Image (cartoon, rainbow, N blue to C red; front, side, top):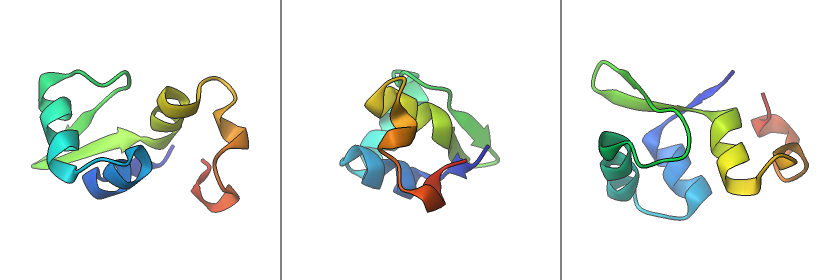
Length: 66
């Protein structure tokens, strides 16, 4: 499983990095959030599933897949 950074999640979701950090702190995302030291990390498969649903593999370019 690949862990995504705040910057990567912001780009995928089409929002700002501060929005990602705020939602991570509040726990309002529909996927797991992991804090590693001072960094927020997000499981790529859960981010894509949240965005695209069960068939998320069809929407993600090959290099970004797990």
